[in-house]
Length: 435
Image (cartoon, rainbow, N blue to C red; front, side):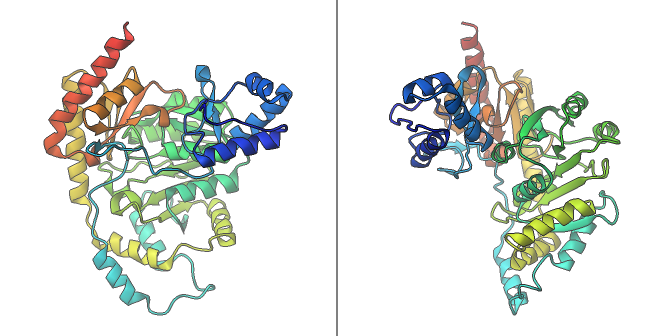
């Protein structure tokens, strides 16, 4: 535990407040260790069950996590808000850790066009999903069941939040990809849901992983159809067929996130319709820009109706201006060059690593996953060599160690130097592990 912060309290509620205050102040930082239940109880002079209750409340809210032999620690991201945006990257170090795209269409001309179109502001009663945007989304998603319901949400994570909060209750088990999207794992913790890991290979969640998740009684599963973050996996036709067979007759909400959308260079093979309750998200952030917090959400009538109803009770609707921006981008922006550039970078890195005997995956998208023996050592060694990558601990539950590399930030002329540095870091970690 951070030595500079002293936890106080004589009840579970006051202990929770004290630890939250430490996180807000920055005295308790992401990853900081906390005392054991008995150690905290002894230090505060309270019963062990009081300290345990405080930790249980904090764990249910996604504030802390139990990390096996590492004990209890502050989660990397908590519901109190992020104190920083992403991992800190020192000056002069190439950022290959962000998971963000770099080749994006210009928004200026589109915004100017939309400004001329908007005219009078819509009234409260008239605002909502634009019919023309819904029609365009339906045309762009011919793989989904005909006649499915479609609405608009404020990005993929917002859609996932609304789907999970309207369909599930705290404590419900949810099947998640392992390794999987760090932000989703944080959201599940914040909602008090129980993650059930589903191993991922290059073809998506494995059959055995889904079978075990269903055996654990999951109420929902969340699958990334293409360009999975962090591994770059994509669900193939054969894998989709196998997973659909396992899902047949199951009372499970199937949520799919196609966040890479037009940036994914492989065909879409969705699971939509494999169960009575399903939802499919397509975000604008990866192909068109991270600031475009908007996504099309399709699904069965009941599921989409619940999301739309919850949205109406809160934010009300997604900005009509933003919807018009996306409509124009869908019609006018061509992301083919960006997709091809990312594909070239990703394939070049994977080929070079394969030649050097370093295992890595990345079928689609902007990220690759590299298996390593010691994440901390590899991340630190690469940082010293001038490259920032993301430690796999942010993305995994039970999966083996690894690192995520975002190739979007890797200039083609620097690929050889980066691969040399990465191979050296991996080999150094392996040597250290033998002694």
